[in-house]
Length: 505
Picture (cartoon, rainbow, N blue to C red):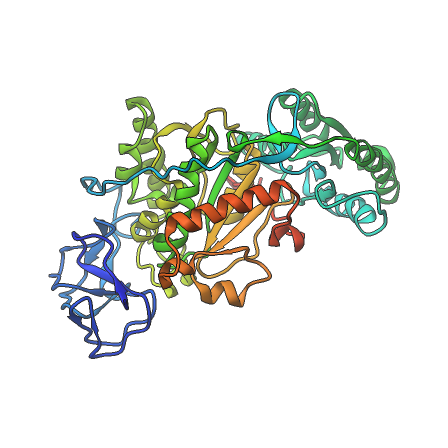
């Protein structure tokens, strides 16, 4: 098979391999060369008519398109996120045509991890060193690296990790609160045994307040803090921090692992560096795993609000009640309204140039592929950025589409394991939470194998089904709980960034 038609309602299809002018695909004669992953029309589409993929609008034809012609940004106009031509969110009424089946598995998944006194479950037992403000970044880095590259009293599951960031001062009140919330949530994550917060001393977001917040959210944790100004400068701060962290690390090594199950999983789902295959192979495979985690009593997070613009009719139809449905719609449309007020076309920012090169033509097309990673279970809750996940089932968290800001928000919300799908490839990882990378195609899996763990390109090639790859994801989660390191962990990726709401002052 050289192309795939995702719905009988679609008027475009996706090339599974490069097509040459004159080739026949799905009974259509291709009128020009079509790159792998790109679309071609399967019927004539008149100017102004909707272009349909995934049984939903991905834009409108900006000119007449003949069956067999390449369909991409040169002849599709996105209808959503168009601040360059719109003054408000367009109301595009669409029905949900797909009859999705919730994936299930009776297989038993036994996890091993660190049971906290509040019942939460950690895949790791790390000591986290974190700054309250960017002025403390270098001290934090030096404290962690002194132990990482100097002492032997640690192991892969119980290590000293750190993050740095560009926040904590010169922020308006609501940005300062968000900064504090994200840092507190990150420290409270169940993958963390103990936390050292390092401040400068004169910043808006104070180390003491962060430490108190972590203790309140996770009273079982070993938490310490100090300020560089009080400690007497850089050298003395590093010396003091190393002493504190060594003591925490020694205590963490005494903690024994205990048994858990998929009911203990708070699974973060993410797609970054997407291509057109992401919505065909990797995301639906992750969706299978998401469904099964929920079936077994666990929690799943769907985020990236930007990348739900154009798919809100599908997500809202799965809301558990009218309140959740209204929250889904208002959150997505509210985010789009912010984009529109920028008076710019969202394309170029999202989808990014790499997404477009990979065959994605509009935010709607990207969103309709993104939503698959959350499976087909009901949406039980909507949470704001970095807020703690408290519900079993599928929660929608309001985050940007930016990979690092989204990931940091989910980790702060309690995500203890994350699966990150990619079609273009990315090394992104978290200092706190293991990130499992899943490639949408074999080419990127082979070329970036030191950064990517699993391959859903087998779905495109027809050698495996989405359910099989979904089971592979779950087996990998079990392996991670038993100490297997993800590629991002091996590479010591410690990406961390906080969603900024306003300007620096």
